[in-house]
Image 1 (cartoon, rainbow, N blue to C red):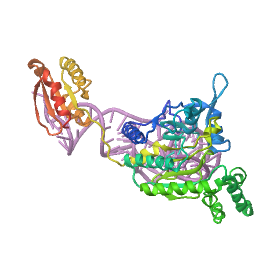
Image 2 (image 1 turned 90 degrees about the vertical axis):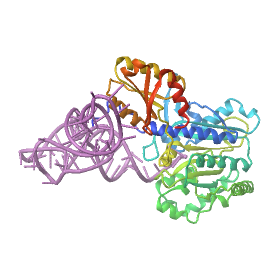
Image 3 (image 1 turned 30 degrees about the vertical axis):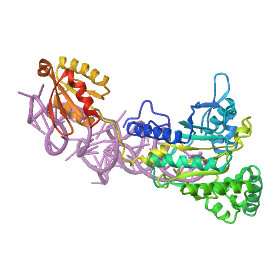
Image 4 (image 1 turned 60 degrees about the vertical axis):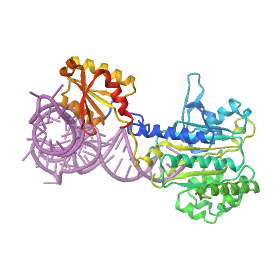
Length: 422
RNA sequence: GUGGGCGUAGCUCAACGGUCAGAGCACUGGACUGUGGCUCCAGGGGUUGGGGGUUCAAAUCCCCUCGCCCACCCCA
């Protein structure tokens, strides 16, 4: 195979037709499920000033340190292609003073995100996310609704065999104490931790809990659990959330070692995972970020949200049967005059809402019929000199082989009346 | 950034260092002068990713390079 003269950018994929139907179905399911919970669509930009992301996601996070597409615009300002959606939604919420509207304000969005990582299964440099964010409610009732909305959407689109993992990582009041408790626990074996974790020990000891290196796993066996270090308020919030999820019949697994990679999370964090995804097992993830609006200069406003990895979801849904629309009519024409008539007829049929395909290139009737069959058309119309002279079209059902003749004037009605019964 | 694997027709893949690099699918046409699916026949398509080396002889062995994939890491 000769190499493409103009190759696509690494990790930036095209999404082709069978998959785009799935994508459309997903967007329809998204609007349906999310609107039942009162979430409204928000269109956020693809670029932001860089500090929108560095402030929110965290200066020392991997995303900010090594994964962002950042460049200077023509005026010398630092611009970044969004690596995620929450930061932009919060920026918008504060900039447009949406906190003055009655709480809660609930939004969803979808679109491409960009991260400069080595591509692998379930990980591209440009990837799509569907996300939702709810502002203004601190009660665990909102956490439960958001998680239940996510589960409803995933089930509605046909996803099976996924797990909901749940954790609470505390708030700004109890986390510092936990951080210190962790440092205390790891201090004796600090030298045995992997180099990354030795760095994490200083910057963000919570991330050591997430490390996959065997030695680090071993060393954290006796480490204190976040859920044991929560302040009374966080403990009660978490307890009530679990109770609400139980009531709703949403199954979840507690994972006290789940730590999210974005700095803005507080209290509730959750992930939806599937073991069919390879090593990138998370298909959706989210959590509470009660301090972020304030961080952006707005009033203290509790908030919670999640994001879904669209390509990962598509991958998991691949096996599923999909209703792909097929043409209503294929018009086969023989000869120049008939070809002109075919164009006219196609126009009339399309005006009635029919999907019409034409034969091209003066192909033989046989090959035109073959193409009609391969396209999956329900009916074929045949026009030749005989038909032109008689003012009729021959029709044939490609489903059952029945055939007949019909006048030009009756053709649109013929298709229209059959369309719904196909 | 670090490992490992793989690059042969549009796609999926064959070919002990030794005839002219093949098959299935797809495409075009025919058998069936104007009627699809099934079957059969024929046809078009390849710098074997690129460059260098070893050899009488390289898709095959060696080196370099480019690309892709998977994994680590991290995340959706």
